[in-house]
Image 1 (cartoon, rainbow, N blue to C red):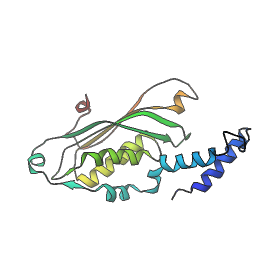
Image 2: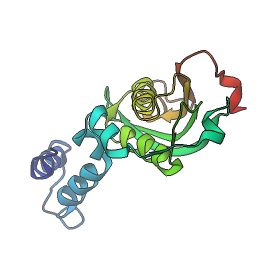
Image 3: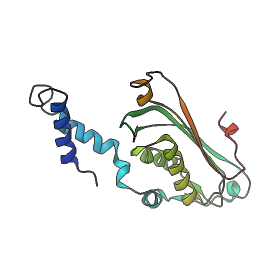
Image 4: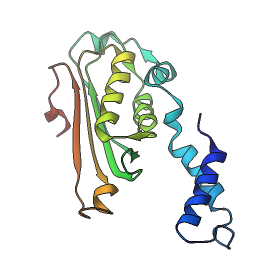
Amino acid sequence: MIDQKRIENAIREIIIALGDDPNREGLIDTPKRAAEMYVEQFEGMNYTNDELVDLFNKTFERDYVTDSKNMVIVKDIDIFSHCEHHLALMYDMKVDIAYIPNGRVIGLSKIARIADMVSKRLQLQEKIGSDILYIMQKITKSDDILVKISGCHSCVTARGIKKRSVTVTYSKLGNNISDGVFN
């Protein structure tokens, strides 16, 4: 579990290390506020992928959908995350998820919740995609899933090269879905 008090103490130490006074007006409550923000933004760290499978495992049998080769596509799910290398923000991220049902469909809001919860970890963009793919496969039992993620990384835009760019990653299971479905 996330230790909010320890984060609060660490933020206080960072303020001191930056050469500022954590007791001055404007900073007095910053360690507490920042710790509360981290608890919220890193909520996904409290769960394994298998625990997320259990948490979001709500599916429906739909013969008219699952007896054919229909495809479910959910696009433009907004997420953000934090790079595990620099703790830097990954932002303007969009997740697209497509799957071919295998006897069951998952509620659409659950798909967005899975993407959101997985992103609330210290992560790499590629790992976010593979984690979503794993959870979706365990819940839907589908053999055909594609996860596309695009996003900006402040570890590129705000430090180092300092250039805005968009990183696009794909995580895929099966051969019956191509990345062209997202066009």
